[in-house]
Image 1 (cartoon, rainbow, N blue to C red):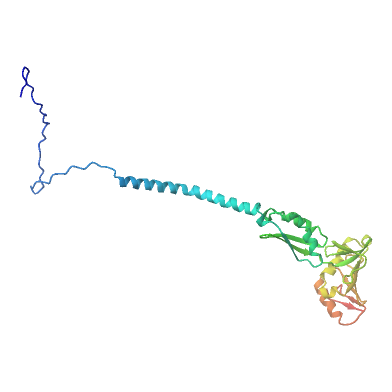
Image 2 (cartoon, rainbow, N blue to C red):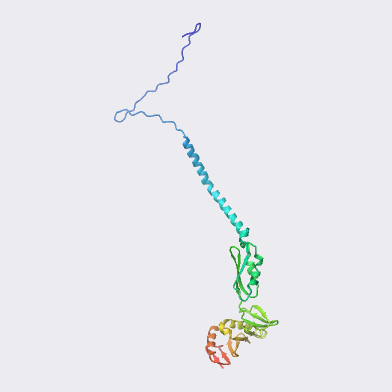
Length: 281
């Protein structure tokens, strides 16, 4: 159709593209092979996106676990530290004394009063032991924390062995010669040791106390006095009046056995200084 007075317009036509020849494939049997279907374009579904996000969050949580665990552990440690070191739950409130017979237990407990109210973990047990061992009758001591609120003091006392003349009366000494007490008179259950140290020497005094220490308890209880003019001439006077020539502190066990046998026969003197050839007279 054309408009009047003008050149008629040609209708637009689309140019056909190049036509690719269709080739058919045949199988080995000579039959045509089925045509290949076009591959669909790959696409990411919403389900895949959600799965990816879930996995990402899970991986993030796994990565945070060590950090969260460390923070939790630090919190627990901090809480425990506060309970042990700063809270009033584990402070020293009572003192228990074990092992005293000659020393009054309250005298030992009083030395721990300075530690009452202190957290047990911060208590200086060494300082307390030093205070307790300063007591003359204490040979050794141990301070222990007994949770939740007790201080336990274990004491090993010195054992009085003999009385030695002193300016103030009589020094009560143990086997090591440590003065544990001073008495105006000789205690009735202890022997009197008389050694002139200026003449006989300090070794004579030590040897005498060593002999007394080596005696069995029943024999020592029968000794009223002990002395020595030298290291090898220790003598004992029994409460019944008899004298024992002991000699040195060597062979103490054998001498004690021999003395037991000799004492079955009354005598004024029992000489066990040579235990293989004892003498009575």
